[in-house]
Image (tube, rainbow, N blue to C red):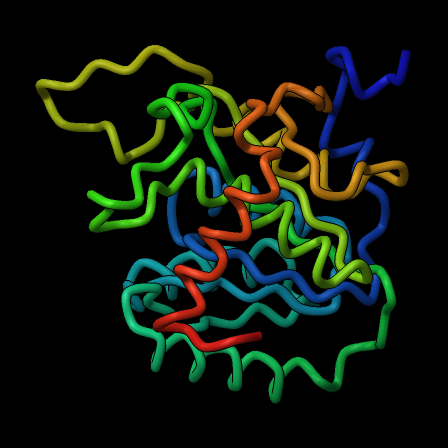
Length: 236
């Protein structure tokens, strides 16, 4: 049995290897597990770390905090709004042009935050006839798997950090039971950097894989969803 099929101990401070020469881009890195992951990864000597967010104010505060913690690190803000394809392309252009001076690497990885909710979709996975918005958790799982098939040089995985108490649930009438941010970011920081990471897999805390739903592995469904996205986005 693979060690990844059962929970394994993980201590970010000691188990994350050196990230020297790596360029890290974190979307939503201004809050919650994204911010906590950025603060943890910045301790391990990456070349650059980018905090992508819609809100420049909150993101700037995170960048300042990272710079105070790791003065030698190049920490940058990237304004990004996934609601606009124009802004997405502009952010991608800015990132590629500004990060081109980083040491080259063939080990490119993408970790997409997902959720256990993807297991509870309707029969068939997606009801395309009544679809108005893309089902996020399920979409991330199928898209990540599809992307790794189109671009095998990219190591992609979708990760479920567990139930984490973040500021998304901080109103007086909401009570969320879950782990704190420091525990919640373990799977975000740990799974992507393991040497024997399984490409296109779904991970949950900590290091457990193979628990994605059958529909998340349905390549016909993934192809249909991919083509639906290509309409407004254009082909990659």
